[in-house]
Image 1: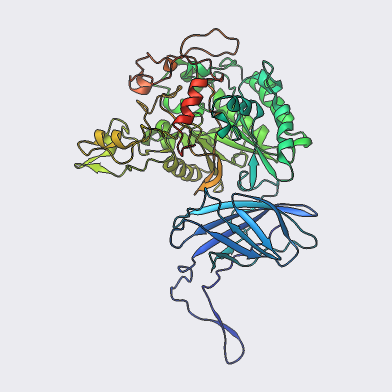
Image 2: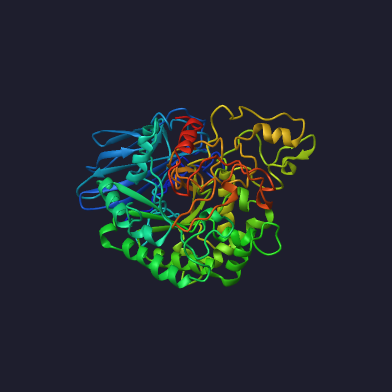
Length: 568
């Protein structure tokens, strides 16, 4: 639909020679591109007879900015009717997109994305010239270099230029909390964590009800719906709180009673206009890497799932069935930096993911990307130290907190792991999602600078934003806060920051609670628990008086708002 249009504007100057032939003056730099101050990636994502949706990404190669304005002009009668992530105005054919208050900062090498809907008639010709603060940029409409859409109708990044579904059930609970209306309009994931959830369990909305509500929210723009597909046989073999309803051998039941019904609903043509993001089986494949065999962290349950292959088979089947639906985007769970960031887990995990993604009829084309930190607490970016720092000649990798890991935060891990995944055979266009629902770590305990240089431990512990006792602690963590708000294309290789875990929903109960949801009692959710090898025998760091996993936990929700970073 869109045409390739890459113009290195200003890099070459055409001069009229004596014979009237155009000749190129030699640019100051041999490559002819070093002086390009900015790049604009303009994509027409969807187009119909009277209108279209476009997404624009601007990369700044010049000095850092605290505000910005992008301008272009149309050759036809295109009229912008609505936009997002920028203040868009139009006078005649001239369009100006200026920053919002929250995205004015544009670092050197940094990018910002915005989108809009527009009307037109006749021909929807692409703009040929863009300026950033009056300086001409080079232009790429995205269709020739890995952007744009593929023949199935899928787009590069489903979040670009789209709203994201706000779950009315979660929104109502959030709004009912004191101060909760500040975030109750944020999009969160819908968890399909048992067979009954497909049609609606315990009076809650089922999958069709959520999709219908998403269509109502959609209006004339694009809408993403985020689903967590989470009911593998022998689910989460290393954590009792999230054990599922299916036994280790019930792979056929998983296929026919869980995945097949979900796929049938998602394939309904009624929902073809939605962009459906499926997060596939969190906390599954990484367990086969770290919690099996002779490792101190191994469990008999994980050894069983490695031996019978049902995690790999289940993930492959889900990818194949859901990936066959043109408007579904599968993101496979990739743990987090404090799980597979170590040298002996990093490459092994990528290879295992490739095995699962090419099993049961699946191919790498069924994988749009990967998600890290789902329902976890790892800080997005640690600014007070890096993995390359040393203290008195000793590497920070030797600190008790980092413990030889090669990554200190989720952003650096997600970007590096994306490269690793591509190296083992995943498509170069895959994008990463990072769950930032509970990794803000703001409030009064947030460090304002590096720790003391007495030792690597004082340096790291004094400066780290993540205030958990141990990076292996995962249940209802005391001191946690809301992280970055959901947003599209926030960093290189990252499709979006998301709140896949709805803030305020418990990770597990603090004590045993009888239930019919298949949820066991995990001591890692007990604040008095002194730990196990998976958290190096530290205290659990969990909040007291927590309900069953997935149930509303008001005290946690209030804490997350209090400690939000960026602050509310």
